[in-house]
Length: 131
Image (cartoon, rainbow, N blue to C red):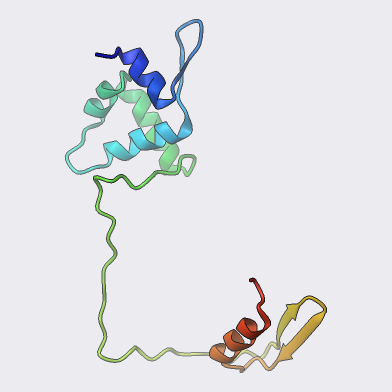
């Protein structure tokens, strides 16, 4: 059976000569994501990794502030709601008064601001812009 130290090293934690641990951001993010699973408790997740709960809580604050990007865990269902319409809802399109310009290399195409988006997409596709 491996020791806690070996387990953490396997996860990417770096131990310094004075015993301090350096946690990679992706592991911090995974630990925080584990605390957000249904039924999870910060204390339990912290204990699993040999951390103090307040340490994990500080990482949660980092995630809340946008300093850690959390992964989607396999245990977590990632679904989006599905909405089915008999007919697509009507979109209100406000014609633009500004001309539209499409640049492809040395070519510049100027279109009226009221040009339908479908037509613009066809032109862009035909030019291969962005390919």
